Every structure is written in C-alpha cells, then in structure tokens.
Image 1 (cartoon, rainbow, N blue to C red):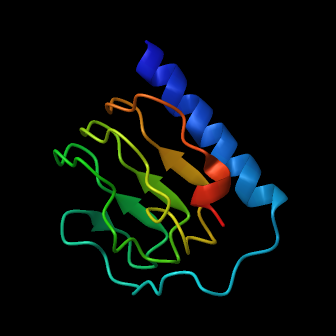
Image 2 (tube, helix red, strand yellow):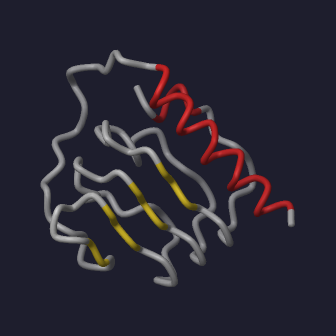
Length: 111
C-alpha cells in the first residue's frame, strides 16, 4: 500500500512541476524519437509502455515526445537526476508496483 501511495505522490508532483515550470535548461540530453527496445510505443511516440519488463532503472532512451510513460510492475528503486530530463511533454508518469524507497528531489529531475 505504501508503494502505491508513494507512486501516486510522485505522479502528482511530476505533473505539478511540469505544468508549473515553463523554463527549461538548454543543456538537456538529446533524446531520439524511437521507442526503447524494451518498451512498446504508439506511432506518435506519445505513449510509452514499459510495464512488467523487470526493469531496475528507467530506460535512458525514452522519446522526448512522450506524454504518458508507464513503468508499472518493475523493480525500479530510484529515479536519478538524468532519468527524465528532456521529457518536456511528459504529463503522466506511472510507477505503481516498483521498489521505490523515497520520493526523489523532483527539482533536480525536471530541470
């Protein structure tokens, strides 16, 4: 139950940070708009599904056009400062049923 609450908090905070901040740094990582090999994507690359893939970290090649990112039912323990950088369009981040131990400093993740 705690993991579900934690994932919900992360999703909510992520959405608020993305919606509230219109400024992004110029030196963000370049992202190629191809679906990560471990995931499934729609043709517009706005929906990325990486559920049930036994992932221990977020794939580094998430397209920058991603709006919804599903990472549920994996073994992700933390979100690093570079894991979500450059995902300017990201609105929904689903992390339920992972192994997250704490809510990360989202200020470092999205800037």
